[in-house]
Length: 373
Image (tube, rainbow, N blue to C red):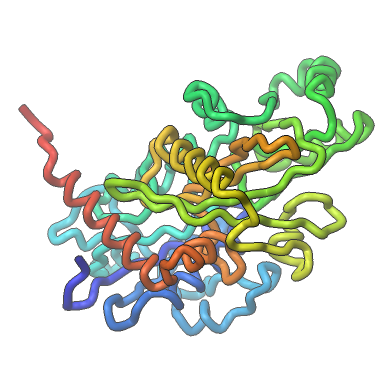
């Protein structure tokens, strides 16, 4: 359990991905939810060039809640996280000073590549500082939608038909790739394989729009996932908390009312009326049980830890399909993850407590492992 004196929690946010601004909004919610009587926060922003910068609470908390208007304070001191354990697990140090900040645990609130995909998690592992969320493996496979779906299929979990497209294949045999994708049946969703927040995603209703959607998605990644869509799916989300026995929240539902026709970036973060959430979702007890079963099975199949949000589709025939997992889901004021747990009886402050305690517990187990014969 968390005991006095206060734990120093480094909230790590920003990052080099296209989801940089959403990460800033998520960090604000996390900082606001951390109990000041139990935790002392250290704010660490990663700018789009990859520099780690100390940040001030007043700057973060005073910023707008519009992702188009938020940004880091680039004038703040630089920080480093040495890739080795330091005496006392001090972790972060100021550039040019070598003075440790005395961090007890790191809370990554990063979305997308170079943050949610195992890269930062690898550095955190090397540093020896406890951290919240999935490790290197779970983060990497959860980020790559193609690898994720392959593992889910191997575990015999239901996913929609899809094709992975690599840039080299597209460059050398574009016509063949288009024919292969069209055979999936429209509507199709064209997605960068390693991004979230619906960045780069387009819904394609006819073959005439497919090429442009693929070209657009390749602006964000070297591999795409093109997935067969359902005609009138219900979008269901379920949150998972790890620990020794992972548990699932009540499911929620997202109803889309936006010109994009799906839960796009604009519908999520820009247009206040782009989507309506209903928590709990209007599901039968059997449907709730199936959604929670699939969410937990997805979490465990993909070797996740700490937390995740599993997104699913419910079609008109009652079949449930796993869409994807988010190993560092959004924590903005409108995000489903904290809302789902609030409706499940876990407040935002309790959520922070659980995630930090889980991170410390996992780190203690790792320290107890033998490293030699």
